[in-house]
Structure formats: structure tokens, C-alpha cells
Length: 196
Image (cartoon, rainbow, N blue to C red):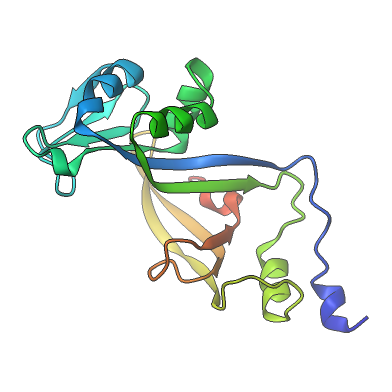
């Protein structure tokens, strides 16, 4: 076995990791606006629109909804973060059931992010990057890029402004700005910012 293959040996996926839908955006026909209000609950209407939509609001679950009452071409746009999806999973439907409902009422998915949370620590960005550049793992994507971020930034933690150190290490597989489909592997622990 070559030295590079030893370095990049990837473990067998562990049952401790889990895959979940981390973000879901979709559009619905304008006629489904009433359904959206009944399914997601009250909408806190904002004083501004979103993208090309004239109206927007925050959903009770934490998502965002946007619509243009006089323009049926634009449809209704709904964006659900992982927090909003968690709320829906805990109180209403599974994400899979929600997607079935979306399609049944004429909706279209515009973005879906899947997350694999590795709770074992076996899936490290350096190992994934080495496996890709050494052709140990092959994908349909030809572009592989690794970004390491070291620096300082300011962040609001519980209402206080604190200086924090941020470290990040991300491997991009594919070109996010040029393709609708790509993969990103990053260290979730580095995303959580701790105050000094």
C-alpha cells in the first residue's frame, strides 16, 4: 500500500453519524398561500419584501415566507433553516412528509441542503481533502478546493460584543458559484464560536 493511501484511509461510516435535511427552500403556487398560513402558523409580516417579492414575513417556526399578492408568476417562496425544520419535525410532520405535501400542492424545491453529522470525529477535512486529491475517492466533480480560515472577528454573544478567534477548515467539492450541486465538508466545532 502506498504511503498516500495509508494517510487518507477513510473509516467505514459509523452508525453514530446521522444524515438530516439542514435547509429547505421551495416555491408554491400563489393559490397555496392560504395553505402555507394554516400549515406554518401565524406570519409576522415585515415592512419589506424579499428578492423580487413585494411582501415577506417571519414564520412562527422561524422560517421566512415571501409573496407578491398581485403577481401569480412569482409564486410563494418559503425558506426553512435547520432550526425551522427542527421545529416542524418536533411539532407537525417529518421533512419527508412535508416534501410530499409540497409536491402534491404544486410546489417546487429550489434548495435542499443535506448534512452528515459525524459524531465520532473520524471524518476530518484534511483526510477528505487528501483522499480527493490523491484519487482515493472519485466524484463526478472535478474541482476540489480547501480553505483554511484563521482570524479574528467580532460577534454578539448574549447581547455583548466580544472579540473571538475563529478557525475554519472547509473542503469544497465542485464549484458552489457555478453549479447547483456541490458538497462542502467542514468542521462543525469550528463553526461554534466561544467568547474569550
